[in-house]
Image 1 (cartoon, rainbow, N blue to C red):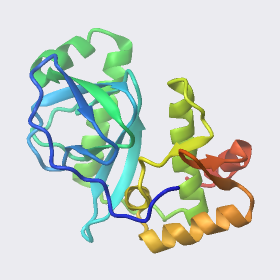
Image 2: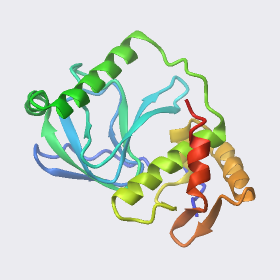
Image 3: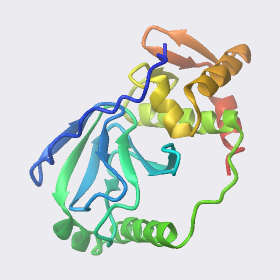
Image 4: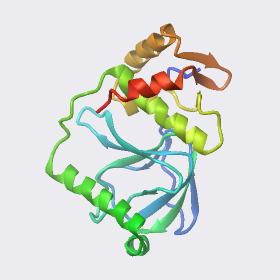
Length: 216
């Protein structure tokens, strides 16, 4: 089952040589908000969560990057968000100066870089004032995202692996471990989840997708 422990935040690895493959365990930090932005990473396997850090130390999730996506794009010299492995993953490390000009040569690359720059502008010029979604909707949105990543990589989409601790999931959802435990109990009471050998099983993906749609 998902264990009631704190975030799995191991000591950051030293930067991998340009072009090398870097591996992260679930919960490991790739980079933090405010750190120098020297490299761009392409996700090869797994998933990476991009987040901002609130004043109280909690994380506010921006989005998830999946295989083929680039992490660390932009033009500012420092990261405007942090990046943390949402599950075990591997990434190719590339020099920032070499990657971004190449991306501009393709429509898809231009779109990715443009989106990153838009985020930089948004983070620099306005604070996040979006209303907090209902807890079950936030949990459902995260579980649906992880389920889709599992399906993409050929794993059972209904199983949320126990490599994701409750503390890590709670951090993604901007809630305490006790709050997460309460809402997981509510999902169990609704017969939507059950414990399994490798973690937590989602019993009704369609219902999770419906709940996730309540998140703006």
